[in-house]
Amino acid sequence: MQATVPQHGTRKIISYSPLEVASVEEMMEPNKPLVKSVLPLTRPKGPSFEQIDEIECRRQERLEKRAQALLVTVQLNAATLAERKLIKAQMEFDREKRTALQTVYRMARAEEFRRTHSTSPFLTDLAAQSERAAELDRVRTTEAKRLQRQIERKKNELRTDVIVKACTEIDEAEERRKLHRRNLQAVRLERSFKDVMKAEFATSKRSDGSHAGSHDRSLNSTGVSTQRVDRSTASAAPSSIPHEESIADQAAKQQSPPPRSSPGAAPPSPQQSPGASPQSPPKDVPVYIAQRQQELAEKARLEEIAKQERQGQLKALE
Image (cartoon, rainbow, N blue to C red; front, side, top):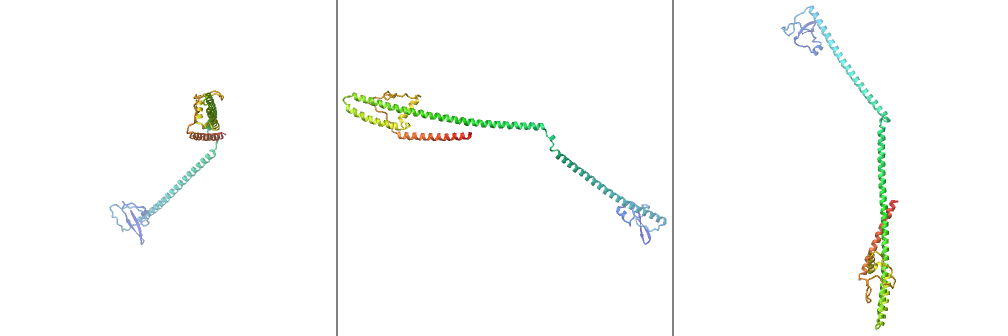
């Protein structure tokens, strides 16, 4: 390669190695124009100081013009390539922008379509919805009937309990009345027995002539004491006399009230000898009376509690 460098109106030829390849910087450098070397490879690389003629000068000028034209061409090609790259980038950007706008537009249209058609009656299965509503109605009706049956069963149970308790209370009251009647009957029998014993004792005393006066006095004294015993027996409660309770218990075991007897008739009690004295009450009569009173008070308290419970159940039923 050769290049000419002007220096004080003269031209000098600078030789380059033909194996060297000109770079872009050398092509852009005005002091190192691109020229072809026509020298053989055996020539030295140093500058040549030979004078060239007009033909060589014209050839060098043509080479310089070609180099300048090549440089202009390279610059134009570079500018054209840069412009093409810019246009390509702009077109790519426009294409991506257009694609993005189309995507946004499609999404907006799809959302609008979904919003406008979300309340459409054709989107639901009317048959399935009707079956579902019928099933829910059936389940609700079944549950209401079950609750109604349960409430009726509870009411019937409470009503039955109230009736049973009322009947039980009636039976208990009837039993108490029967027991009271038996106690009264036992008291009457005891009085009749005492009267019979008095009569037999008086008869036996009258038959004995040697002791008539003493027998009369003893009979009178016995009559007074018997009358006192009768008054105390009549004034006392039936449940406060232990031997009367024992007689009532014997009558209850027989399951039938004893028949009434007149004062002159023989009582259905164990026979005693004429000289025998009437049965005397036990020594623990006050203790028995206290126990009996406690039992009656406890029973009355329980009856009052049961009555209050029944009233509460009746109010709940109402």
